[in-house]
Image (cartoon, rainbow, N blue to C red; front, side, top):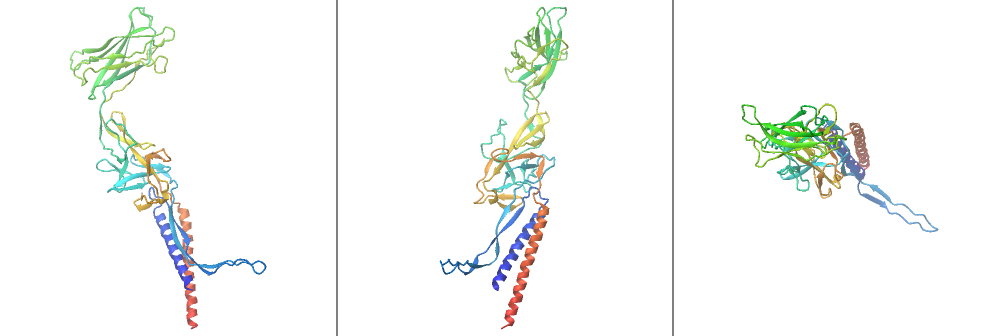
Length: 426
């Protein structure tokens, strides 16, 4: 009789654990990055009433063992890592993991793993979780190169960070020059302008003049000038005056694409000693090449590689975890790269609250790498992964747990009534 009471009480405890778990899931139905959990049950030891008997040839058949169970217990818990719905937020610090993997965070010497990507910046510009744990990744070296083979560390995105200027080293031309037959009066003269930069980011106005070579068909003389700093008369300084480019009379393509060297920049610009700048002409026959076809001129500077200094305006997190900063000078620079970790047995991780997990003896060691590699999922910047709790399933499980609880209490009530009847017989 007491055995039925014991089994029923264990059933009540198990149903209560199930109710507790369901309540926790429902409470976190709107929690960003929450993973649904479930409890698992197993039966307890059995008391054998009689052993099995072997069949005796010609005399009797075999008999099966008779045993009675003693109840149920919670044997484990499982976490569902099914993908939650990704919701776009537009916040640059938000990131969702599409696929497998965990963000890595460190706080007070403890390492945590989480799928909650609702990150933020602290007062030092460090990327942190909602509880202030430092998100881990790789930062660029002094040359701006990110190496993902070394150890991870905190990631910083200092607001207002300045990007160093870069002196122009190359100016590239493009477009078309009209056909020049070498005769016919005054030679045509066409100009293209651009702005180059010195080592401190100061602007250097550049004018490139193309003049048809007198008496020589399909040939153009090139001169490059810049205004002389401080001049009150509009004086200019010649950076290149002996350049010549020629074209094929049959194809209209340049017959030489050797860069012209611009040098002897006037005082007033911050340039290293011996500084030179190349005026480049793309390879003949390519889409970007300078041509000489009949018609109007479209000659222009297609690009130059210098830029002024700038301050950080905003940033984004790419699919591989690279944090790209956009500066006021139009440049984009890598500020760091977020690391992801995967485990051979993610079910072996333990939940410690705050949407964090920690490793256990059965989770395996973290395999740290970049998003999109080695089975790791990709990152979606400006998005968050919603809770993967299915409310309909949880409400259904709630009914199941309720019925199990009530049935077990009915067993207790019935056993109590039977015991009372037995006592009254004494």
